Every structure is written in structure tokens, then in C-alpha cells.
Amino acid sequence: MALTNKERTLIEDNLNAEYLCIRKYQQYAAMAQDSKLKQVFTDLSNKEQKHADTLSGMLSGSGISSQNMFGTYNSPQGDFSSVSQNLGFTDAQLLNDMLSTEKHVSSSYNNAVLESADTNIRKQLQHIQKEEQEHAETLFKEMQSRGWYKMS
Image (cartoon, rainbow, N blue to C red):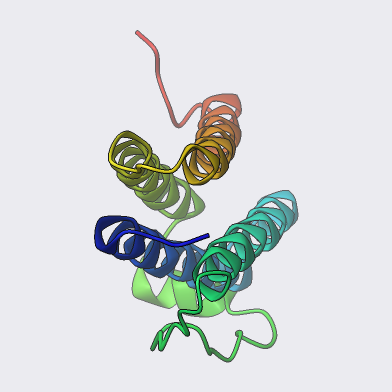
């Protein structure tokens, strides 16, 4: 599959966003106070890794080797919940930050979908965008269930 220059740029931009999400979810899993929230962040990090793998595959399938500075990273080891407390971060703030991040990433995929010439690329990006929206829904429900997202 040959990518247009625009498609390549859009895929690389979204790959950067995926790597950012992976890192933030891993860091927030280590920083969260609540054990269920730690698991939510870990699960979402794993899903974001699948997105990154898909995007990397799209690039490599076109003979493009991505030299992404965000692609390698050492995950936090251990529990850093005391660090988040010392820095003044709450679980509510971690959730809110990731919800905002997911909204941004979903919007970025929307642009990529609309500006891709190849139907197969568009379908793959639409699938990832749908999953990003599901991630946002998961975060929203976590916030709402804890009384941290008021609908009134």
C-alpha cells in the first residue's frame, strides 16, 4: 500500500499521539491511588499499544521506517501513588487529563479519516477512532461513577 505524503504525515502524527497515550496511561497506572483505576489505565495502555502497532504496520507496509523518538520508553516500575500525592495529583485529575487527551486524539483521527485518499487506510483509521471514543467513554464512566463528572 503506497501512502500519499499527507497520509504518511497523518499516520506519523497519530502514532506520536498513541505513544503519548501509552506513556501517560503507564505513568498514571503507577500514580493512581485506586487499584481499580490502576487496572483501567493499564488496560487502556495495552489497547493504545495495539493502535501504535497498527499504525507502525501501515508505515512499514509502505516501506517507511518510522524514526519515532517516542517509540522506546522505560515503563515506571512499582507504585508511585505517594509521588502523585506529594505532587498534589488526585485520581480525579488523572482521569480528567486522560479524558481530555482521548478527546484530542479522537479529533486527530477524525482529520486523518477525512483526509486519507485510500479506502483501506480510512477504514483502519475509523476503527482506531471508534476505539479511542470507547476509551473516552470508559474514562467518562469512571469519573461519573465516582461523582467526578456531573451531568447537571
